Length: 218
Image 1 (cartoon, one colour):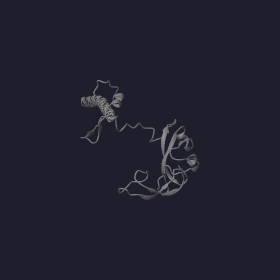
Image 2 (cartoon, helix red, strand yellow; image 1 turned 180 degrees about the vertical axis):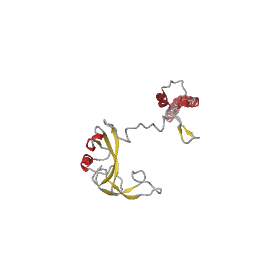
Image 3 (cartoon, one colour; image 1 turned 45 degrees about the horizontal axis):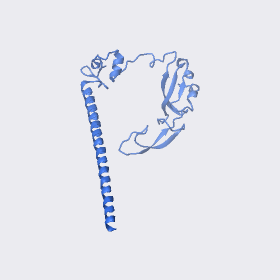
Image 4 (cartoon, helix red, strand yellow; image 1 turned 120 degrees about the horizontal axis):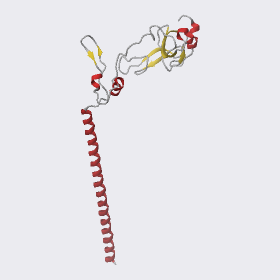
């Protein structure tokens, strides 16, 4: 887009802001876009969280966007562009949120099939309208890597006899631990009662002995 007047609504907007596409032309009427990022004319990327419309030099470490760690623990000072859109940008990345009335050639006019099928067992059942008795493993969407090889995802949350057995085992282990702890608690409380009784008897014997000694002294 060469006309800067069409881009005026995008200026001074931050990344992840929603903008209508009406000003870009009649073909974008009704479309809503989200600003995802961009690069300035020297190729420096926009970074989320830097609230300015110029370039800054920041110290980057592992886990930060716009930086890839080359050596463990290595930090680097790099130039990045702020997240506010300005006229110095060469490219602006937009995400299509809402489709308008007209089609955009090469983007919304053709239906592209999904590359990968569902992976979770319940999602596969939902896609093929299967019942609980049907085997999900026969309905996994396989994709061709080449003429000889096909790939299928590992089904997640698949209920198998081994899984049910494992679940039963864990439950029985928990139950056994509960029974054991209950038994130990009962034994402990019984022993505490016995100990207190013993202490009481010892104390009483000591008191009786002292009284006896006092009487003998008189």
